[in-house]
Image (cartoon, rainbow, N blue to C red; front, side, top):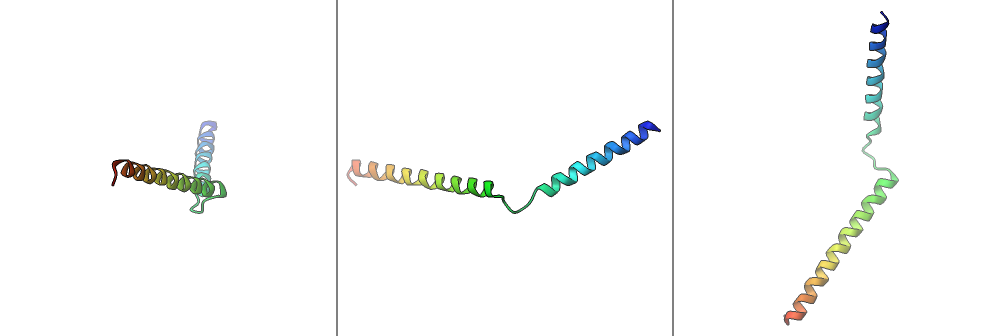
Length: 64
Protein backbone atom coordinates (compact mmCIF):
# COMPACT_ATOMS: atom_id res chain seq x y z
CA UNK A 1 0.00 0.00 0.00
CA UNK A 2 2.87 2.37 0.68
CA UNK A 3 4.05 2.03 -2.92
CA UNK A 4 0.60 2.97 -4.28
CA UNK A 5 0.47 6.08 -2.12
CA UNK A 6 3.94 7.13 -3.28
CA UNK A 7 2.95 6.67 -6.94
CA UNK A 8 -0.19 8.74 -6.46
CA UNK A 9 1.76 11.49 -4.69
CA UNK A 10 4.38 11.44 -7.43
CA UNK A 11 1.70 11.69 -10.12
CA UNK A 12 -0.01 14.51 -8.23
CA UNK A 13 3.31 16.35 -7.94
CA UNK A 14 3.99 15.91 -11.66
CA UNK A 15 0.54 17.18 -12.66
CA UNK A 16 0.90 20.16 -10.31
CA UNK A 17 4.32 21.08 -11.74
CA UNK A 18 2.98 20.87 -15.29
CA UNK A 19 -0.01 23.06 -14.41
CA UNK A 20 2.26 25.68 -12.86
CA UNK A 21 4.52 25.56 -15.92
CA UNK A 22 1.61 26.11 -18.29
CA UNK A 23 0.30 28.96 -16.14
CA UNK A 24 3.72 30.62 -16.27
CA UNK A 25 3.60 30.78 -20.08
CA UNK A 26 1.74 34.05 -20.47
CA UNK A 27 1.07 35.87 -23.72
CA UNK A 28 1.92 39.23 -22.17
CA UNK A 29 5.67 39.84 -22.28
CA UNK A 30 7.28 41.09 -19.12
CA UNK A 31 9.39 44.26 -18.88
CA UNK A 32 12.66 42.38 -19.44
CA UNK A 33 11.32 40.70 -22.57
CA UNK A 34 10.03 44.03 -23.92
CA UNK A 35 13.42 45.64 -23.29
CA UNK A 36 15.13 42.74 -25.07
CA UNK A 37 12.85 43.13 -28.07
CA UNK A 38 13.60 46.86 -28.24
CA UNK A 39 17.34 46.15 -28.10
CA UNK A 40 16.98 43.56 -30.88
CA UNK A 41 15.08 46.04 -33.05
CA UNK A 42 17.64 48.79 -32.44
CA UNK A 43 20.52 46.45 -33.33
CA UNK A 44 18.75 45.35 -36.51
CA UNK A 45 18.13 48.96 -37.55
CA UNK A 46 21.77 49.85 -36.82
CA UNK A 47 22.94 46.91 -38.93
CA UNK A 48 20.73 47.97 -41.82
CA UNK A 49 22.01 51.55 -41.59
CA UNK A 50 25.62 50.39 -41.65
CA UNK A 51 24.89 48.17 -44.65
CA UNK A 52 23.25 51.05 -46.52
CA UNK A 53 26.17 53.34 -45.67
CA UNK A 54 28.60 50.71 -46.99
CA UNK A 55 26.66 50.48 -50.25
CA UNK A 56 26.69 54.27 -50.61
CA UNK A 57 30.44 54.37 -50.03
CA UNK A 58 30.95 51.62 -52.59
CA UNK A 59 28.78 53.46 -55.13
CA UNK A 60 30.70 56.69 -54.50
CA UNK A 61 34.02 54.87 -54.96
CA UNK A 62 32.83 53.41 -58.26
CA UNK A 63 31.72 56.86 -59.43
CA UNK A 64 28.00 56.12 -59.75
